[in-house]
Structures are given as C-alpha cells and as structure tokens.
Length: 155
Image 1 (cartoon, rainbow, N blue to C red):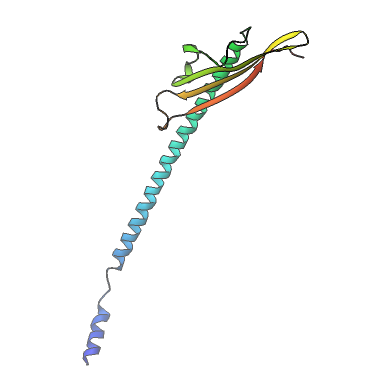
Image 2 (cartoon, rainbow, N blue to C red; image 1 turned 180 degrees about the vertical axis):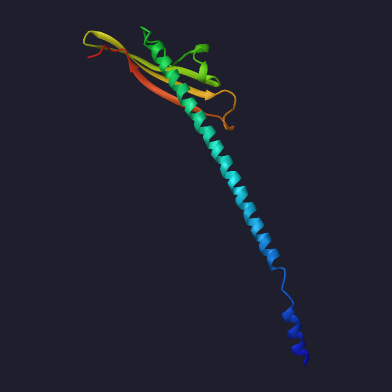
C-alpha cells in the first residue's frame, strides 16, 4: 500500500467532531435572545396597562372637577373676576379620586341680556394630575378638560 492509501483509510475511520458544539452554542444564544425579548415585551405590556389605567383615572378626576365646577358656577349670580380658581377642597378628593390633585378654574364669565332676561356663560377648566409620581416619572398622568355652560332659560 502506498502512503496515500494508508492516510485515506485512516481518515475514513475517524468521525468529525466539533460542529455540534457550534450548533448548540448558536441555538443557546438565539433562544436566550428570544427569551430576553419576550421578557421585555411583557414588561412593556404591563407598563402600558398602568399608563392606560392612570390616564383613565386622571380623565375621570378632571371630569369630576368640571361637574363640580359647573354646579358651583351655576350657583353664582354675578360673574366674578376671571380667571379665578374654584377650590374643590377635600370633598372632591375622595373614593377613586384619591391620589389626584384637581384644580378647577373659572376661565371666563360673561353676562348677556337677551329678550328681557339676563344669563351668564361660563368657561370652566379642570386639571387633574397624580400627586405621588412627579411629572415624567412612571405612573404620572394628567388630564385637562374645558367646558362651556350657561344658565340661560330654555327656549
């Protein structure tokens, strides 16, 4: 036998190794990256839900402020100097509104005379924001609602 035939015969019997190790490492890296991505997506989903809930609570707190402002403004016979802050006090910050600061302002009040009757047109703004997390912090939410109402007689 020649030397070349001897080498070929010896190499046929040897099993190649090492490629399965590279495949296993590649698979491990890909699965780790996929797991990290799924954890990131899950965290984002929870964070988005928190913001949606806080935003809804802030909206309803501001809406409560406008309702309170309407009831207060319609009880005013003469237009006060505007803009003026209507103070809801502690009575508005109860129940599900805990954790929110609500500021209600009477932006404008104009008196109108029409057909022998006098009425006012009020523009009221309510601003509600979370108390604990500051602006820019996770969990912070704020909403502003402006309404225009009148005490004009119907018809």
